[in-house]
Every structure is written in C-alpha cells, then in structure tokens.
Image (tube, rainbow, N blue to C red; front, side, top):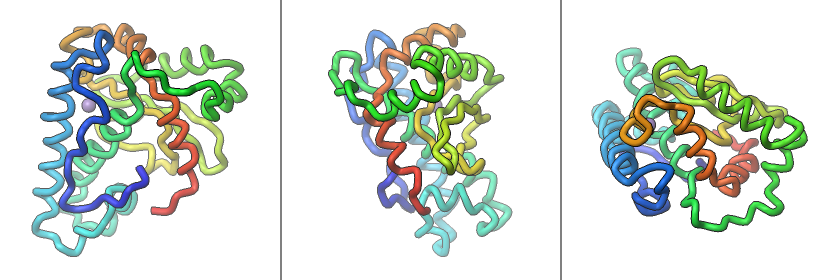
Length: 214
Ligand code: MN3
C-alpha cells in the first residue's frame, strides 16, 4: 500500500462490484468478506487505539513493523487487527473481474516470475502447493526480499510478510471465510478459481514499491 493511512482507519470500498468476481467467487462471500470480516478488523483496531492518541499517527505499516513501540497490553490486538486490515486490502486489490481486460502483454511481474521460476505454470504450481500447505487459517504470499528475489511464503492467522522483512506482491487468503460458501472445504477448487481473477497489473505495481520506507 502506498497511501498515507492511519487512525481512524476506514474500510476502503472494493475496487469492483460485489458480484464482479462471479462465477469464481460469489457475491455473498464478497459481501461478508469485505463488509463483515474486514470491517470488524477496522472497528477493532480503532477501538484499541482510541485511548492512545500517541499512536494514532502511526501508519498501518508502522503499527505492524514496530510493535515494541506500543504498550505490551495492546501489541497482540494491534498485530491481529492491523494485519487483518493490511492483508485484506492487499488481497482485494490484487483481484479483478474475469471479464475485465487488464493489459498483461508486457507485464513486468509475469516476465520476472517466468525468469525466476522457468515459466508461469511452474510459479503457479509452487504457489498452489504453498497455499494448500497452510494448516488452519492464513495466507500464501508471493513476496520479494530486499534484493528483489521472489519468495513464496505462508503466514498464519493475520500475520504479514512485513515482519519477516519481505515485501508483499500477491496474497491469497485461505481462511475458510474466503471460500466456504461456494467451495465448501475444497480449498484447491478455490485456488483454481482465484487464478482466474489475479490482477497481474495491480500485483506488478507492488513490485515497484519494494524500496518504500515506512
Ligand atoms: Mn479473509
């Protein structure tokens, strides 16, 4: 994310309609995911910070990266809820309606992934295996390290790659709330459907932010 964003946090609207990802992700799932799940993280984080004016100018990234600056009594709540906001904004912003025609002809991310992984299918296979390996709730991520090398990682709950010194490029939310209404417990079917919705242009923009300062 490259926008100044601090307390009081707001839930940014989805960059597309709730039903725009159908038939791959259904409208009801998107409504609940955005309006209830993400909204709850926003509400909880604001609630936690409301009595701490000295931390209300911290950006979302600063709250996640420098927990030691916060009182120990709120560190866990900040980590979970700021992480929940950060991860969901990243997830929603790297999806696009299947009917849209984003220009991926000269996509810098796709060409760099093909260089590192041999081809895109090899990358997608490795990413799928990572996403399937998440036990319980969490995410699979394409990230970059400080040297620009791609790394596929998984995180538990609402932990972010930031705290591992990695820059998020493309996340996949594999909490069951992301797919259970449509795909039930079939995570691999959800992953296959998600692949139809990847916004490669939006993910490529995350690469160019890799030397950002928080
Ligand atoms: Mn989620």
